[in-house]
Length: 259
Image (cartoon, rainbow, N blue to C red; front, side, top):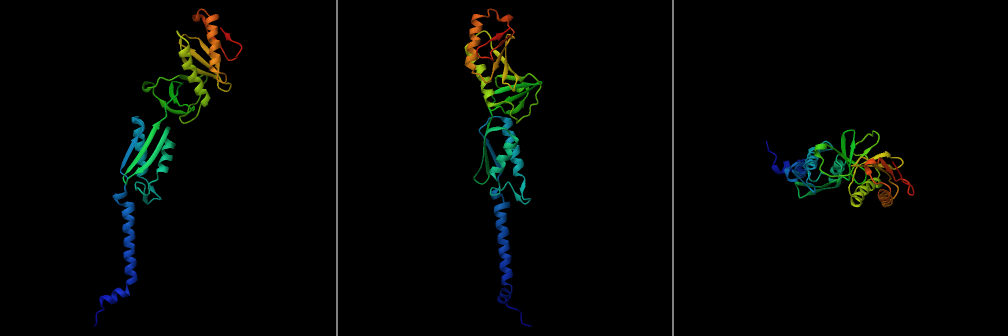
């Protein structure tokens, strides 16, 4: 019996052989570009901040996201699959930062640049402490033993629910409060402001308590300088002994009330 020649076999199965090698090539390319270590992100570099807590959280969040899969089959750790924009959005949803940039570098490195929000005020509420940024945003709760900024302190006259990530003050109110603390420190000697208390948030009224026990009532919608000019004139002309003073109300421009 005559055996079929190799050439005849190749001719007979040419299409199947081509399809086989084509499939093997595709599988090889998929492995090379998607699943091989060549394009795997295995290093995360965080810069822009020296806060160990923030660095640790960025590392944990990024590692967790990289270990996930896209559409159940594509590893997010792959350089070509990984989305810097998706990770940036996820980080912003979980951390409150002032600046954030996420970039892929070379084939194995993920670089994260982050700047923490610098607090402008310290809110004290029901024994808890919170940092407030310049826009009135609650950036985080802070333990009293871990406070590292010397900030103007504020509180509410009534109990208020404070939620991290929420805006509880207008930007203008934050600026007003900081301005009062700075200008009183510069203008007056012998006493200082230790705390601002909102007595009527709706009507923009604030009490500023001094270290001597008495307090000022100011209007956040009026000019700070004008109210402090009236205060200075009153203290020089009318009040000889501040130990007997209870409060000074400067909310009305042309009238001063005190007790």
